[in-house]
Image (tube, rainbow over all chains, first blue to last red; front, side, top):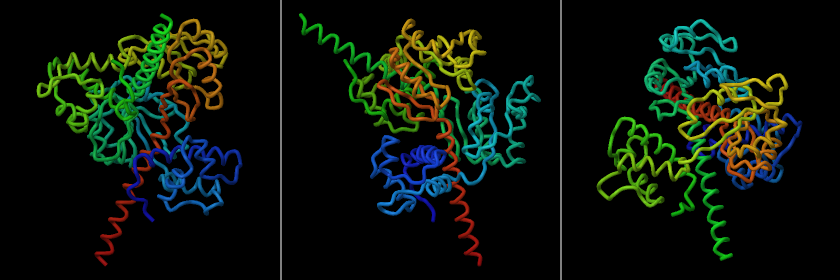
Length: 222
Length: 222
């Protein structure tokens, strides 16, 4: 059965379900329920049931879910039963951190190579992964059937690199560059500075609230 | 005037507006319009106007926006006219990348110090920022009036560190740990692995679509 027309909100909850169910499996818990999942993930139980029903449901009414089955089904739906090959473009701070990151196994992603435009980096390795010149990017993607390209390079060349990757057959792009790139394949953005700005906005709003309360209190005291 | 009850969706568009308007300012463009902004940001013009109207609007009907004024107003609304002090907990890959990151000036954020539990890292520096032992975290936040704490440490201690930061008066938390932490202050999550999993889900769906098309074509040929 194909899963169709799943909303973006549900798609974004899937990894959280999987993360939590994986934790339950590691704790050797055998069963869970929509209520228990909802409580842990700050959702409500009917939302959890509705989400799972989009995929045909994974449990029997009133009996909850078998943790192992649920984990496997979530991984299957999310396409995580096969491995994906990834290249990182940009060997700066972010690219280096990603090349060193040990958690990609959990998503069945293998970092194959890193690309940079700086000649002095070419031939070196990060975490045993080779650094090649960005001129070789297209050929490497074609020859090694790379699935995912990470943009961790300069803002000015992000769209150009995207076009090269798309032309070489990349299937998805993980973008760390603060730019809205255009591509005919799925793009996931990690816009760190925007996330930071949202946090600052909320801190600032709290400050305005506090200032207002202080002012009201002062007025009362007058 | 206070800006109240602004939806999360609008809040998340604010940094994108600011990013684009900053680019226009750097190009010395003097004026822009809701239509031009919408086209660049993949929104529609009436949405842009509605968003800006939440804050009282920044332009005259039919005349568009003055780029400098718009940029200043967005920065003011987002609380970015003052500076924020930040500490990073965890001197691993992510913590190191963040300590080396040069873009925080744009959000008026200053990285003050890094904290780790490993004795061998204490006393060292990353990008000229000192590394202290995590036992000193609470006192440091209190003494230096730190605004933002970054969680880039081990999953197992993330909630504990959060509680210490909150007790010491932190105003917001930027969380890179794959865990839903609980705090009475604003929390922004960068869940990298979840973003990766969403990307994989979308790649997988495309694959299913292609497989189905191929099957249909095969059936037609039969």
